[in-house]
Length: 298
Image 1 (tube, rainbow, N blue to C red):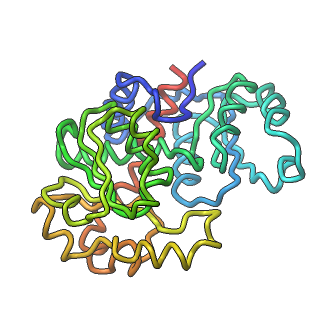
Image 2 (tube, rainbow, N blue to C red):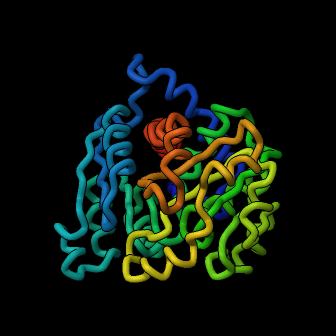
């Protein structure tokens, strides 16, 4: 049984297989494309709100021939305290696969183990694997192979997006630099386990110098609203702006997984100057997730 639960320990050849198939899936959209999910029904269980993840998975499942049901956890017995293991054992007898967006990584893993149906992590507090596979495809679509390139992540370097970048860098052999205050850097255990060409620094300028891509995400993730004022104060100097981008390579890409809060993690002018890349990145969620779904059911 195949699942996509995290990039940590995901074999390099699987990542490469998924990435290689996205180009064809994108090019052939709507042109008699295969329907590997024909006659299947997939459940989407979301505890966290979503725009891009929800829309891209719903459209993708339908375009691959499947039916999809969206289940807000608050509308299910999960919202009243039913354990995830019971939900898993019920849905596993009724649907053909599940896409889960929630807080605890352990919930996704327990669901996959007990449901015995293909399960996709559509975001947890630990990782955001579908997003990073999309980002790598987007980079390679614009600039060629990511191997040997330099990616710089700026901002909260200890949240799910940069942690998935850590595992991708180790697997795919590119350099990852994380620019963040000390308390917002990945812990040493995660970095030691990954064993990639990964460095962390509080010096944002040195991290961006000569890089091929600069990436950021919101400073206040879902579930951290009570920390907003403190986070904004501590991360205020880690903004992507035109002055910072002058240190990167002239053709460096700017990426953001959205939603973006202009004037905080990125300024308005830099966002708009790189909007074509950022919204292509958002579109590519659809094509990459169709590649993931196809791989899971092959």
